Image 1: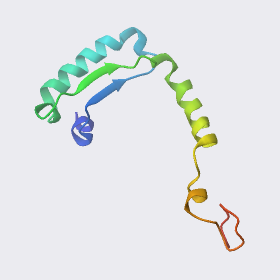
Image 2: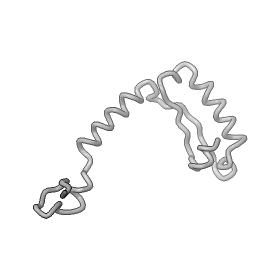
Image 3: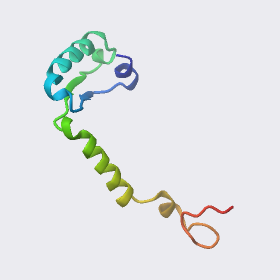
Length: 93
């Protein structure tokens, strides 16, 4: 309950390969607990759901890290020209 109250979330998603068999049981128990104990429930609804990609979450997360590292713009390239010799990403020592 502390994490729900601290982050003031609207949606709590349960994931992982083990939840395929027992996910609905955990979802129902957590939904009851959030409904009776969370401070946020008094202000807005907090939905508790199981992830539709539960079994593949680790593989999808790993692929997204590779995708982000490959295609996301680098901050040093966006900020400026780089060091005194114009090289981007180099630290002068």
